Length: 305
Image (tube, rainbow, N blue to C red):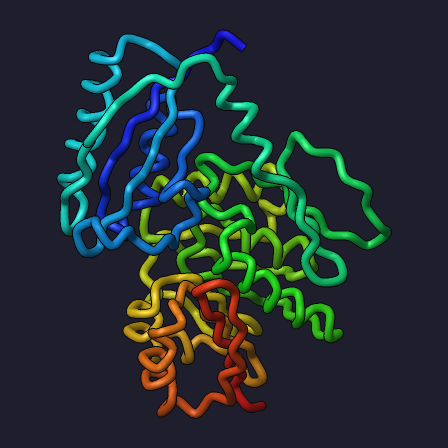
């Protein structure tokens, strides 16, 4: 293929991954990776980076490099006014010659089956389905959560295990929804009321679009309200956020569980399990059951009836 691409390296504060990626997508970016892996909210930073920083690589169809650089720097300057701490900055830009990067990028992503019924797939792939399968169509790129990253996969497995055990969690809360994949999966599996909260308005817009695209817009409500403003009584509460945030929000997360409700926590590096356990220990929940994938942990608690 003769099509050429420009690759821009951008260092970003770790908590800004989703909002920076979404803004770049609006500016014409057609794909994003972090540390050579798909952007999926939680990627450990390189030891050589500054603390709390990720290296984001953004890919644009070839244009005038100077004009693109000015456009991207303007986007980052605007975002830095709202980031705490600020610090998103371009470090390098170079051309990828003689390769069809877009198609090569797609080859890294395929359909995955999770539990008995859930299938998560990119839009370009046809898959053989069984009766009763729940399908989530979600493309990588500006999606930020396609089931490929261990934290998302662990959450999906824990979510599916509740449904596979014969329970019917009708009310689900997804804290830090990102792409909306967990909320969409819950609705596809049968939950009737799914509340997805996300602090960034741009991420909220993307999650709403993904829910509508998957035909569950009527079941999934996306909100930017603070967790403390949301109602309780949820059969499942999902929080695929960083360990420190899980610990900080422990009481608020637990308070939103209905009797018998299940709390699924991820985004937790294994060495930080004790931090999260200590925060939840006094809250009277049963657990945790802990699952591992690569360097990540998923911790599942349950409120007694």
